[in-house]
Length: 220
Length: 220
Image (cartoon, rainbow over all chains, first blue to last red; front, side, top):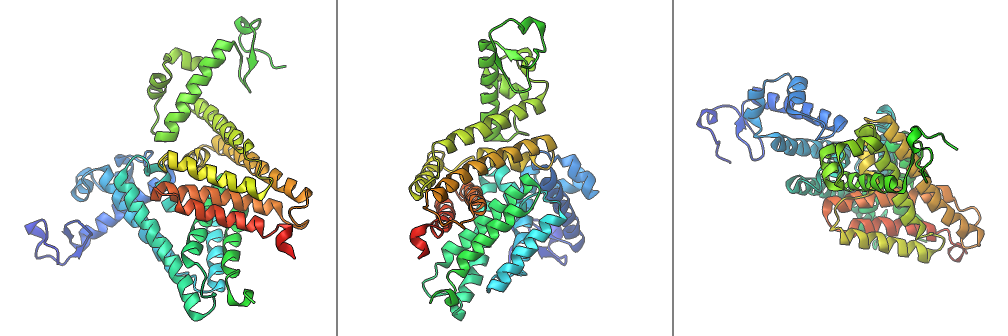
C-alpha cells in the first residue's frame, strides 16, 4: 500500500496511479481524458507540435484541472508514454504470436489498421521515440522499457511455440523477437512515408519466414 | 537552361540549383552553409525544435541572407530533405551491396556509425519522415522519392549479384531490397531507443541471411 500524498484523499474510494496521488473515480476519469487527448494530439502533431492549450481544448478541461494532475508538459508526456505502452501491449495481448497462424493474423491486423488510417501516424511508440529519445533522457528510458516489455511479449509467444514442440529446441527466440519487432518498426515507417502498405507486408512476411524456418516441419 | 529569376545574376559564373536561381560560387557556398546548419540542427532537435534564429546563429548568416535563398522555413526544410537524401545516397554509393561481403561491410559500417554517435539520432531520413510525413504533403512526397531512390540503389547491387550468377535467377530482388531497408530503419529506431546496437545488428543479420538464402551456393 502506498501512502496518499494528500490527507484529503485518504478516505476516498481510490485507484492508485503509479507514482501519483490516489484519485477519486471522477478524478481518474478526468486525468484519463487529459492523457487520451494529449496522446491523440501528440500522435497526430508530434510532442513539440502539441501545446497545453491544445490539450485543454481537446480534453475540455481548465488549466487548473490539468495542473492538478500534471506538474508540467514533461510530466504529461511521461503519462502519454505510459498510456501508449499500455495500448501497444493491450493490442499485442490479442495476438499471442504462439503459432504461425497467430503471427499471420497479427500481420494482417497490423496492415489492416494502417489501411484504415490511410497509412498515417506510423507506430504510436515509434513516433514518440524518434522525437524524444535524444532530448529527454527520462522519456527515452520509459520508451526503452516499453519496447523491452513489447519484445518480451513477442518472445513469450515464440517460447510457447518452442515448448509445444513447434519450434526446434535450438531456435533463438530472443533473436526472432527482435527480428519481428524491427521488421514491424521499419515497415511502419516505410509505409508512413510511401502511403501504401507493400513495404510493411514484405518486411513482416520476411520476419515470419524466419520463424517458419525454425519450425519442426521445416527442419528435416 | 533555366532562366535566372534575377537579372543581376544573369551574367555571373553560376551553378544551377534545382528549381532555384543561378548562384555565384560564393552564393552557393553561403546557401550550402545554411542548409548544412539547418540539417544538423533538425537532425539533433527535430524540425519543430529548430527555429530560423537557431539556423542563423549556427550558419553565421543574417536573416536577409537566409531569406535571399529560402522563401520560408518550409522552403528550407525542403532543401534539408534534398541534402539528406543526397547524403544517404552518397554513403550508400560506398557500399554497392553487390556481394555478401559488401552487405556485411555495410552492416558493420552502419553499426560503427551508431557506436560513434552513441546511438543518437537514428536515420537522417527516418527522423524527418516521422516528423513530417503526416503534416507536410510536399515533404512526404520528397521523402518518399528519396526512399525510392535509396531502395533502387540497394536493388541495383542485388541485381548485379543475380546477373553475375551469385543469386539464383528467381531471387526476388525487389522484395530483398525492401527487407534490407526495413531492417535498417527498424534496427536504427530500436537502437536509438535502447542506446545499444544489438537490435540493429540482429535485424541487419536477419535481412542479409535472407539474401544469403538466395545465393547459388545455398540453392543445391
